Length: 483
Image 1 (cartoon, rainbow, N blue to C red):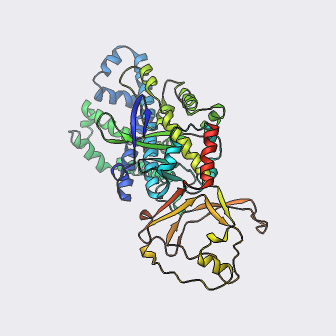
Image 2 (image 1 turned 180 degrees about the horizontal axis):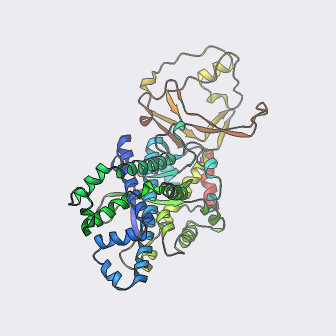
Image 3 (image 1 turned 60 degrees about the horizontal axis):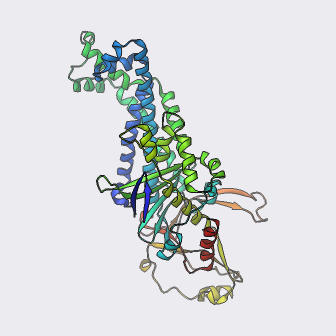
């Protein structure tokens, strides 16, 4: 399947998680730590005072002497541009963290929608209305998990993640937005203690080619510059509150965002890359008056480029998407409406997953279901759980059997295969729940039948829309009628 990506035709591929992500959790944390270090350095640049910026520029920037020669006004412009560059760098690295987190979450959750070739053929070329975006994402689309992988005909796949600001470790997640943010705040505290150490200060100056500082040494210009660099690195100790506020603000911009990713080959080197689209809460309002994905993307793009900073555009595309030539050419090449249309198709599939197929024909009942309905002893299980697949496959639409009653002493289903159930919302609607009726609570994660045999990372929950189902066929027809 080929789509238009930034003015070029690219072939969609299956996402290779093994290539794009470290396999074990410590490596994943190290990946975020590397980005955290970049953010920390840019935080220091943003919070440095004017004198520190000027002294460091004299030492590190060969062209700064020309700026000083042009007068104080140009120096002030240099300082302002230096801080703006630091701010853009922080925004860009937070966007990179959100991209990597979305990718890692999809691998960790292992919740897959598998679309067969028959349905793929029917969905190809479909244009979906963007109005579906204007809804409660958490309840309407992310009722099964906060991250999904959509596999189409075993030919290409998409990743869709909701950066839930309310997710926490108690929900059964190892990787989530609040955890990465907390790690970054802890990282700044660690770096603050590191740079406040007199021993480390001496080692730093020694690496710069100077002995441990003394009163005599500090009068020398090179020592003064190196000492000033050290003081710049140590400013977090005095501006901890400002550091935390900046981090909270930047992470707030990506909280509760949708991150949509598709994999394709990079035309420049032939390696697989993952391109992204971020939708924030403000996109809901924009989608109201849009009829096509092209209109919606144009509106999003226009909103992101109305100022000169391109900060919103970097965040929406999840990267710094800069052309080598002038600004006008760069703007003309950005085109991801095809990817946005596939995002809308995935949202429609998630909405369909709510539907249920009510069955009244008793011929569909299994032997044990018949026996349990009559309050008779069930037939013993013959298949060993170890022989069963590690994939828990759920056909869509889900079947609800009417006329099937539960006996007083018997359950109405066989014991399920051991697996880990993630935390999920539950709304109590029945009249018997007097005190909590219509209240939504979060059910904690738990282990069913001892948990997954090989661990959560080896168990997949696969949802398969059945291409022969009448409800699925009517669902596809309704999408084409609306297109």
